[in-house]
View 1 (cartoon, one colour):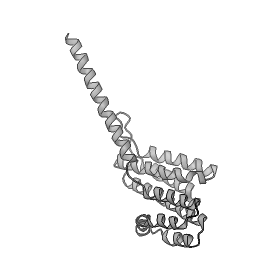
View 2: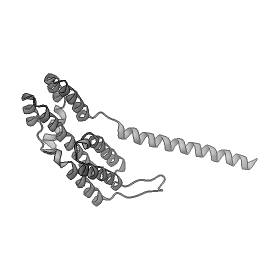
View 3: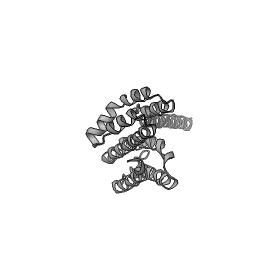
View 4: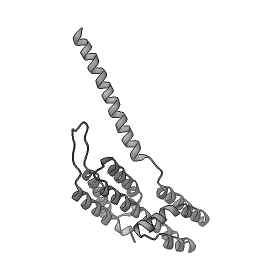
Amino acid sequence: MKRQGYVQLFARLLVLGLVLLASTSSYAYSYAAAGKEPVIDGREAILTALNQQDFVAVQRAVDGLTDEFTYLQKEHQVDLFTPMQAAVAAKDAAKVEAVMDRAVVEEIIRRLDGAGKNLADYQVAKVLVVKSKLFLDLITPKLDDVHRQQADLAIQGTLESIGNPGVFGVGQAPADPQAFKQQSQLLIDAISTLHQ
């Protein structure tokens, strides 16, 4: 009877542990996936409007990116306003799309920069690398096979180099700042053809 009580207690603790682990994993995933991405949403709206040759809608979508473009200009000295306004005024769909590709590249660089500065905080670094991957997925179809493969390997390398806190210490690995820097540069090099 005593043994059965221990078995039931162990089973309850095991279930409780699994529930806690599942909720922690769920939280980590939702944290990584949470939040709107105005550049992604704006890009989609712009491409839709370009397909319909509706430059009024293009301008409206561009206006919706004012905060993001202002941030890139102030914090990263990247002026997307000037080329975008010129492209919209000229109704040059290819140039509008090229400016948005550059915006996506800049968002990847910005997220990688943030992750590199937060390697001591695994969760923050992971979220920023995962966000980089969301942006990367938008532009990899535009890369040639060699650069696409380089970008795919490099984003995996950045994710691995941020380390792993493990589960109850099991599987724990420290962040590797040098590897992160190297993989980030490989990724930036791979997408640099769209950064013009």
